[in-house]
Length: 69
Image (cartoon, rainbow, N blue to C red):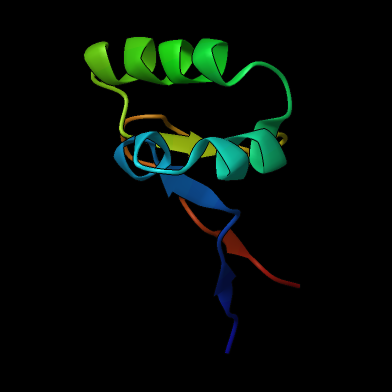
């Protein structure tokens, strides 16, 4: 039986609730700019932030899951 594996996808609303220290740890950079970008994405209706290189990732649906060999 094949398993499905998911890339990391995080709800944008959850990221907006993170502390400044947590956002700096995750993204690096200026926290105010990170929060602004997350708010813009949320206002566009995006729900998820995913891992780079996730094939088929959708910011509205998240990671589709991937078959493991």
